[in-house]
Length: 326
Image 1 (tube, rainbow, N blue to C red):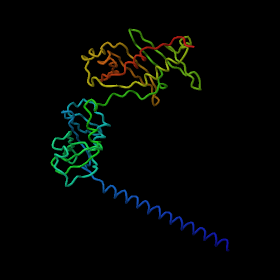
Image 2: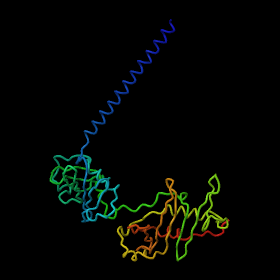
Image 3: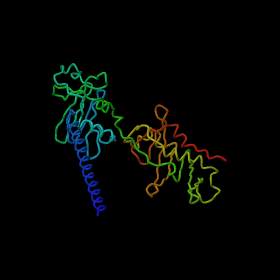
Image 4: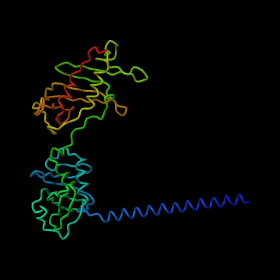
């Protein structure tokens, strides 16, 4: 009986401790939430919009204006311009609720902060129909900027974020064409057409351990098997790693192709790859060298983009030495 009583007492103590710990945990969580709310309430914001529908800013005397349409953005000066959505979403997020380091109530006249001749004007239109222009003035020694809402007289001190995000020119706001997200090991066949000659290579899996071999032309006969996989593995890695350096024309016409050497390209590179259980093909034409001599003009199949890609990298892709390596 005493043992049962002791056991019951122990259970009650454990249960009581559990309730206490739970209560302490809930109390601490409440205190933390209250502190976070208090910290948020103490923050100062220059703007507070629900959603942003348009943003414009001046850059070196040019006004760049963008309007949001659904989940994407358009450039008001050319609706075909491929806007970098990530960059614009970031800018919209910054101006939506722009934090200030402090509000300078009772300070000097706006001229003292360079706000009579602002270095930048950022105009924001919200879904509510409100349009607000933020003027950015002088830079402080610690890297912050003075700013004010146009039409108001109380300046703020803000971080450099808004100034930095509106320092981009139009070219910087362009979304570059993305190539397939593949690895060299995903590539199954490679074809290089150059100077009227076409070279085709096929990768074959030889056993259940995943051992592979590359063949010239086809894998129908072992006579076509390359003595080493090294050159083709490097080529596959190079092709999968191609990236666009810049875009020379995002709406090229057939008549303009000759100006880039893409009406009769010097080479056409293509490869097939497996992605999500499907075989897909990527094809790219290589034209003339770019103006500075460090790139080639290129165009993927049926694309409106004329891109520039590093010349050294493409030279390696267009020349394959499959010699008799041992």
